[in-house]
Length: 126
Image 1: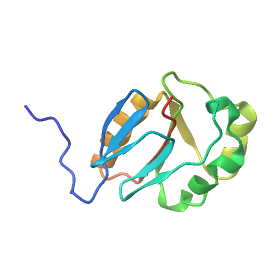
Image 2: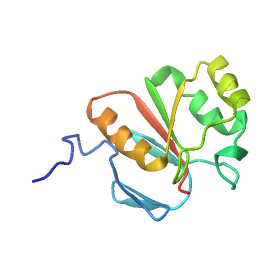
Image 3: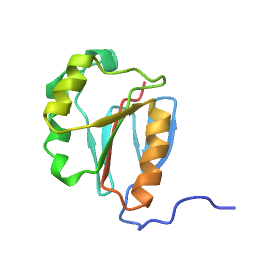
């Protein structure tokens, strides 16, 4: 039984997240990415995980906030919370982010995107 969501061929589905690699559509990515239904872009963030992120790393997402209903942040293999200061700064910029491990963020993105929601997933591979 095929359980792949029914979405248009022009929409990005995250097909897999294994070993720090993402397969989105037919492309494979091994670095942090931002996935939207109609695009995938490289996300320039420092190494070292979620604890190293600053407000400026979220600028590409903040710039899109008017076009988004939901932003999912995949913090790597395990869920890692953003610092309270960073979370507050993102909220003052008008951005509320749902934080989860990257596997959960990939799955949640696919469901919300299939529902037609305006969703972005900012994903760290490890």
